[in-house]
Length: 209
Ligand code: 5GP
Image (cartoon, rainbow, N blue to C red; front, side, top):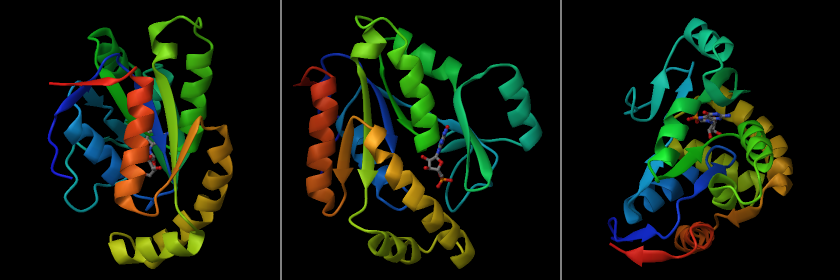
């Protein structure tokens, strides 16, 4: 898919995307961010160490446990959760800034964080722009065996980490029923087409730029 920033949504969206790790969520989010302009990717804070080519401030804000707890106390997170033994959180200020500037926001967060955002959004008046532009998508894998193969093939994590992630995956998949939309990533092209369709519908259509 060679399309680069060819479209923009007619209305901004607040898109929350969750998946068990290894389901292809980052790939699908990357494809969306390349094809559509007007999106801000919400860069989360995490207490885990950078992996591979990850860059501070781009993939995550890599912070210490103490810094994380200070931000929790200061109410700086829109949502936060413990995932795979580390803490992750979305900075409220970054999301608010983007939405106020009329941008769409893409949040790649876990199912517990998604539930917190959903609760906050559904507490807003039904006609608020944030609520009407809210869309949540769970990217699923065809099976847990398939997920195990993908994680080992990706080669980024130790066997111990992979087994821990698989243990969590079953619980995450059970949470998929709370999401408004589920996309099974069996074939990347088809999964992207479905994902794109969901986002475009939430954005009340798309237009070329
Ligand atoms: P990873 O460490 O593999 O990058 O991410 C592990 C999990 O943490 C993924 O499911 C990812 O979506 C989730 N995650 C990343 N950032 C956040 C965040 O800000 N909040 C929450 N709740 N989960 C996050």
